Amino acid sequence: KDETASEIAELKSCVDKALLDVDAAIRERDTVTTESAIALETLNSRIDEELALNAKLQTDIECLSRERDALTQALEEARLHGGIIGKENESERERGMSSYSTPTKTPTTSRFTGILSPLMSPSTELNTPETPLTPNDDDAAAALEREQAELDARKAKLEQMRSHNDYSVLLTFIEHHALRDAGFMENGTPVLACIIFRCLLKWGTFEAERTSLFDKINDSMNLSLERAPEDYVLLTYWLSNAFTLLNLLHRTLKSSSSNSKANRRKSSTFLLDRMASRFRSSSTPLASSPGVKGVEQINAKYPAFLFKQQLAAFVEKVYGMLRDHMKKDMSKALAECIQAPRPNRSNSAKAPKLSESWTVIIETLDKCQKAMVSSYVPRELEKPFFVQVFCFINVQMFNALLLRRECCSFSNGEYIKMGLATLEEWSIQSNNVVSEEAWEELRFIRQAVQLLVIDHKPKKTLNELSLELCPQLTIQQLYRISTMYWDDKFGTETVSSDVLVDMKARMTQDSNTQKNSFLLDDDSSVQFSVDAIAGHDLEVQLSGFSVPETMLNNPSFAFLVCDPAQQ
Image (cartoon, rainbow, N blue to C red):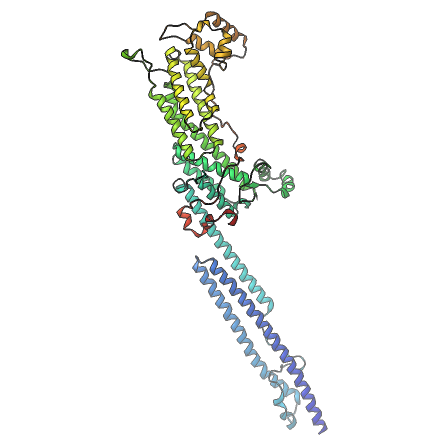
């Protein structure tokens, strides 16, 4: 009996220890199962977010759903597999307990066989129970990382596709629909310039190290311009939009001061860095340059500064095309307007009326001026433009007068004077578009005409002619007009022979006088620096405009309706 009691106590101790080990194993299995469930829920949440973000691409969404179901099924199979293994372990533990009790079958051992737990490990030692099989933690983490990497790759690809679609919408609008659907706000702000600027802000293009969008925008603007290179409305439209966009970039873009030292070190080695440094130094807003309301200044990268240079070149190109088109329309009329039409014998006593040539000149100026007003071309461009146009008128008329003796007559002088008076009247009525500086460019032709129509020429001295009557004309120009003059109306004489002798003597003394130096030169270059005037404080309104229908119906461009500070 004592021996039996001792054996029973020993068996109870083993059973209790085995039960504790089994309970710990069950808790560990439940912990691993809970972690797997949490991982599954996290994965499901990410997949659901991806589905909501990429609703347009249903095919990819269905693929992700199938992968989610497969992962769920795999987890369920793992749980089921763990249950089967647990049952197998039960039978093995039973056999192990039987062999452990005694090598020979006795009534005592058979009585307590059923007391042992069926979950005992089949191990030869009762104090080392085996943990039920569960999914490996490292394998689960690796699987989650792979899933996340695949999701990130799909998201990046979808985002890139969406960006290219948005770019295509903007570029198509610039090239084909801008002039029709993007006009001007009440304060004169060009809508297209605001749309382009806000899209570039929204997409973060100014901070991009590499992008082809800037080049494509520049190409689209040039393609639209080439469709009607001699249309005043189209030319002034693009002049206004390009200059406004350039102004916005000038007031917004800045180079990163924190990287300036690094850029200087790299500039001795890399060509692109040298170019970027030059663009940044010429494009960084000055301390006095006003910013854009609601927009913070941006630490832009090299492509943004290159785009700014392209915009400046585009403004100069449109300016030159507008000026050359105007010159072309007026050139023939300018060559004809310096000679009065021959009067009929019945009306010989009456002053001749202005010919159609003067009408063409006035109408051309008026057409261009109205196009500039309707396109809200900034004053910074209007003023130098008409100064250069009036300089061209002056050069053409003055040179034609000095090259054709039949035009240096008294009656022609009166005729040109009447035409210039008509031109002056138009300038006064042009809503201050034509400035006093522009009218001053006609001083050569006006003084030459004054010399033709002045009374008592023989009584005038050289000083009176050169200092009072015609201070802008050179001695050679005075001599040319005086020797070619003839009075076809009253038969008056030109200046005295003494004055002509003095003129000739003074020309001889001037060793710098060259052949044909009495003619004026026409300067066709841009008479101003685009960068110098681009930083002016233009009144630009970036919100409140009518969004074009093609963008209003596109969710990707919904930010255009909001204030730029909220996008």
